[in-house]
Image 1 (spheres, rainbow over the protein chains, first blue to last red):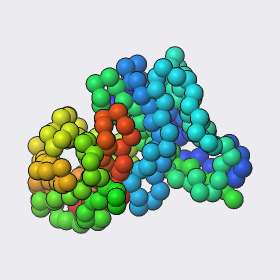
Image 2 (cartoon, rainbow over the protein chains, first blue to last red):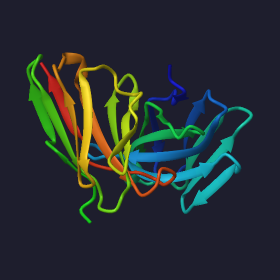
Image 3 (tube, rainbow over the protein chains, first blue to last red):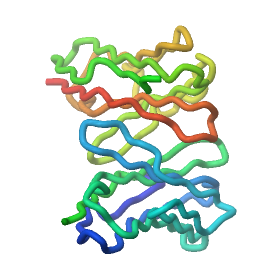
Length: 111
Length: 113
C-alpha cells in the first residue's frame, strides 16, 4: 500500500508562472520529507527537504510547505523555467529510518 | 568524485537467467541504498547497507533477489532466476549518514524477456 501518494502523474505550466506539486501521506510517524528531481536517463537528485517540526522551507525558487494535520506537503516553484521540466518525487522518512517514495509527477514548463 | 557509478546502464536478459547489477558508491559515504523504479509503484527501497552491513532488506521482493557489499566501494544486486516482472530501472544511492540526502546513480534499466 502506497504510504506516499502523488495523485497527479503530470502537470503543465507556462514559463514564469507558479508550479505546485502535491504529495499526500498516510503515516503520521513520518518526520522528514524530501523532494527529488529526475531528468530522463538520470538518477534522482535531491532538491529540498523539510522536517516535521517546520511548516515551510524555502530555497531560492523552491518552497516546500508541510501541513501535518492534513498529511499533505507541496512543492512550489516560482517562477517556473523550462529547465524545471522533469519528474518530481516526494519522499518521506519514518522514525524507523525507512524511506518511502511517491510515484512521481512529470512537470512540463512550456516556454 | 565521479558520483555514484552503476553498471551496466542497460541489461536485456531472458527469463530464468541470472542478472547482476553493480554499484560503486561515493567514497566516504557510509550508507548505500538499492531502489527499484516502476511506473506503478514509483521508487521502492529494496535494501540498504551501513558500513557494508545490510541493515534493512524488508523491501527485497523475493528470495530471488540478493544484495551484497563486500567492501566500502562496491555492491551488487543479483536476481536469480530473473522474471519479466522484474523489468524496471534499478537505482543505487549513497549518503554520508542515514539522515542526509542520498546521491543517486544513473540507474540500470533491466528488461527481462
